Image 1 (tube, rainbow, N blue to C red):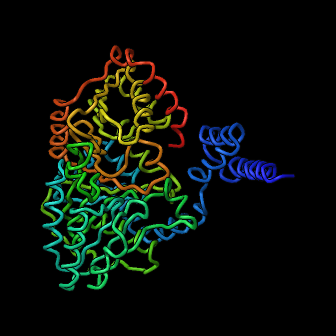
Image 2: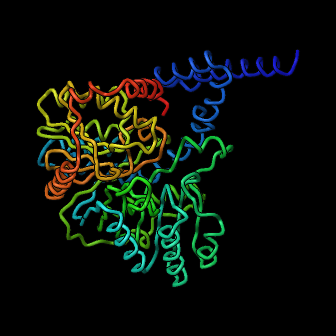
Length: 479
């Protein structure tokens, strides 16, 4: 047997083992499993390489199950008390509409997502405003700064944020920075001054084979900052000059929120759970990190987090519940729309029930395969009455959902399968009619620089576009 034959038979053996693992051990969703099995059978060598890159779950079940158990043990007492309070009396008048109470209960039950009241919440729709506010909060920190970001660019903004953190560390402020292995672009030496000043910097999750697995799966896609336990930031903006509109995609339209109040404690808790998982440091819930806040705001806030460490699918279920409670409208913005059948059905049913359903997506791709899958799925919904708009004024990266001028969701999770089950994501669900009305007005302002995709215009797309959509749709379950 020559070397070529040996390689061929080795690949076949590994492929058969992979197929057995997919069917009997992983027990994946049927559609996802079928794609991988066909790839391994029909394209043995290429399928094997793709499975190594995209498909394998390196010890995911064991490692993330331990994380989930630790998180649940930390939260169990808080959740039990609040579930009892909700069942008895509701939460400070926010449950006047039963569907909102149902949404609160769902997120408590499937994600241990506590409800906080009397928060002050404001949103940012440009990077300049968001980073001005973040840097101002960093410079005003007295006790600690906790940050968790997917992408940190090695550019003027990224280095400027690190410099601001270094300055605060020199002043005796506790600084902790958690980043994604793939997304962080600042080299180790770029953090030396921060570490020398006493700051802590670490990565969220490194696979046993980081050069392979974390190129595609299990990213810490969260973008969280917490200052002194009372000010929290969350949203779509990563740290880099492209998020100021200085990249190749032009003006960057995104959404982030600043939460002042007990809602910031939820982001603090999320950070500490992730920090403890990454470092095994064992930080505990103390008054220093969770100071008393005398609320003056009008917003009730829940923070919902999803990822491969969750038994349920809380991000997707949050979106499904938001769609189901809508009576008047559902407006959503996302750069990537690659949903599963349950999301597609929910949007179709809402539209055919008379709800005004609108989806806003970019008019240009930053990830071509995902973009063509996006246009395929939005196109499929057109004849059900779901309206789609492409944003023409740069690139829209916001991950928002507004329902009936009552409730808003703003965070890091796209409307795609990757955000639902492969990435670590966090959204803020904000119960505030005035805030939701402002978000609707932002959406309506964005419509002024959008083009609506109609059934007629979609039907006239060129054959090459149809072919791209077909190929992208074929692989949508593994994008």
